[in-house]
Length: 316
Image 1 (cartoon, rainbow, N blue to C red):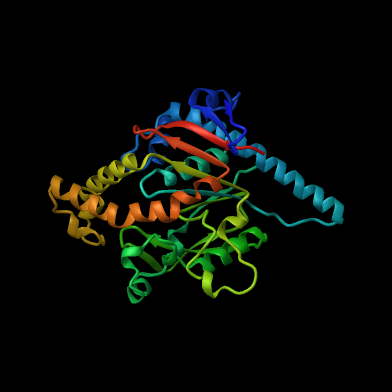
Image 2: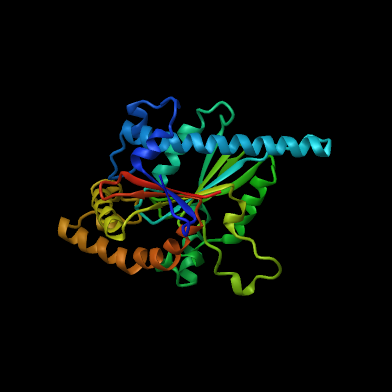
């Protein structure tokens, strides 16, 4: 464990972090772990034990403390406060593995006795529909801050955090590359809500210039936030590898928005993926995503093998 007086973070090596698991039991089987991993990732029980079990233990301690705080407030007010979910935000680049991190945490946290119900919501559902993006000339800016309906996302989080019985989120289809009409995810007072997305730690939006009154950001609703990090060169390679796998799987489906890429050769796939990466995703990473990293309370740093090599935890 390394503490630099000029850094807001405590730095842990993988081995140091692994020791913080204490006696937390591993409740997932190898088969379950396989179901959680993303495309082009190779999760192992060791990765779960060394990295994610200590993280789930830390988060459980935070959740317990927050629940006790709500009870104390209720006692002071002489009333029974409604159930308020603990909200965790997960940010990071395209292809860095943040969706996998979210799924792992959902599975592990739901095993703790005080948080049996854990919901996972991705911000993809809050992208504007393609017809609106096309009208605004934003199809090539999909994933950039201006491509999201931030007001709708904030309304959803406000409903969640105010303890409403139901909060409704739109559903996104990666096959159709668009919002699914008349389909919604209903969140009904879970113990924890995990919100995963590219720009969830941002403090500015496309609506900034027209906003009136106090500014509200997505991250204002988070009780805890983490950022999944890696070198850009590694993420670029992971993106290319993932694109080539999808070319031979999901893109083969005639209903896929990217079906036109299914007949590309290996070389053409690499060139196409690199062009998309450098024209769109790399720009978004450098301009909008990476600058939010230091706003996270915890940073998972990955090596070229897709495994977490070190962890940074913000000092309290």
